[in-house]
Length: 56
Image (cartoon, rainbow, N blue to C red; front, top):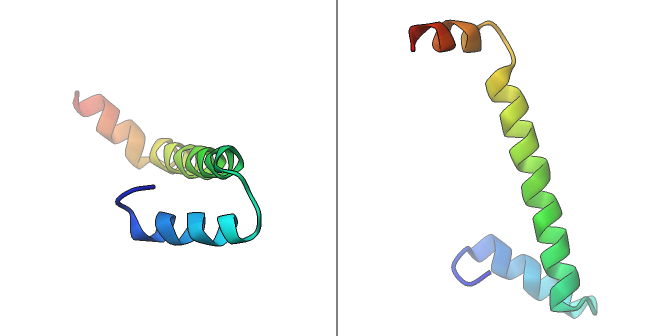
């Protein structure tokens, strides 16, 4: 919320909508969880992951 400009813009927009800092943090955490879950699924799906695991 301090350094990332898109997040700063998001916080400004949500604050203008009347959201509290706690509510904004909750929304940001949900967004991070969705992105992380998506990246984890992409990383573990497909035949490439098995070939990568067997190398180590």
